[in-house]
Length: 427
Ligand code: AMP
Image (cartoon, rainbow, N blue to C red):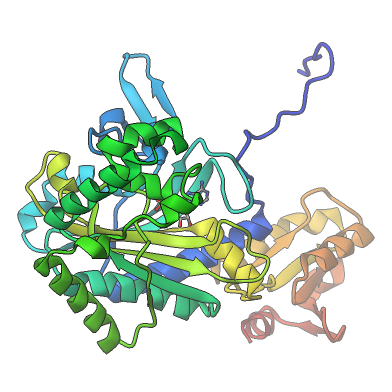
């Protein structure tokens, strides 16, 4: 029974900062995801899937003062009055799961990867969305300069295996806790002298966490911020040694990188090695960081686990896709269907469905008209489907036990038995 709608329904639109992936684009993402999954197998990482929302406390931790966590999260209460947050990034949830499921009991290293949507209330622009997909890895449970280097090498391998050329890897070290503490003190002192020139958030950060001033969206471009000291000015001997080990491992693995002394990354759980993968492709836009990550020292403990280190990196899938498109790299194959069945008569439809099922069971891709269209209409569908072969069935064919097989490219057609038809489709 049809129901009359009062007035004209309004066409609904997707929320700002989100996008629809139509099938011709989804196919590209699937190819990228498959590429990534193969690489993960090669490097021994296993997939973890965590909820897209967590208790807010997983992200909103005392020590995390980044803009992303303090200003950009989607927070809500559920009907049970629980404070929940849509995940803005993958690491905190993955580590929460690592702790809750006691993966640390395996001892030693656990290598995880994830792929899924994240949510940040940011100002949308090219390459920046409110819902975006990240692929990321977490290598948790040990502290090792060799492992830090391996995660950077893996990022390099991802870029190289995708065929991306105009991309570089930037590396830096924030130093160990002692180094960071001296560095923070120095920055606090320095920024006190510029208090009135800082935005209100950064004025608060002067004592709470001055490193975040360096990547504040408002203040980071101001000359005095750019002239502030770098972490390397305060490295302890241990931090220096650790970082030089990372760099020498990278050299021995033949990884091209650049040390960027000003790289501090946007999250507060990092210590020691940090890195970014940056696209320098013409027309790419301002959001040119494809991926970023680093070593974290106390995140596992902060989320209720033992005091274990980890290292990880996350890539934005949309930005990887943009880079592939800018460099004209296609990962997916344009797969054409094998066949399209055309019938001369409605009565034959039943037989044709039998053939369709049989061919699909054998693994051939193909279709048929479901609207009882005439011959011309079916032919149009067949042509639009871009199928390699058109299989034409009429009364005559049924009587003789034969099918007319037309090669859509050469336009040649012949009458064949089912056996020959299957052989031909298989070629
Ligand atoms: P982050 O978690 O901020 O270190 O970001 C890691 C990567 O995720 C970035 O390098 C981007 O590729 C991607 N990313 C972060 N935020 C967004 C966003 N709002 N829209 C699209 N991609 C993003």
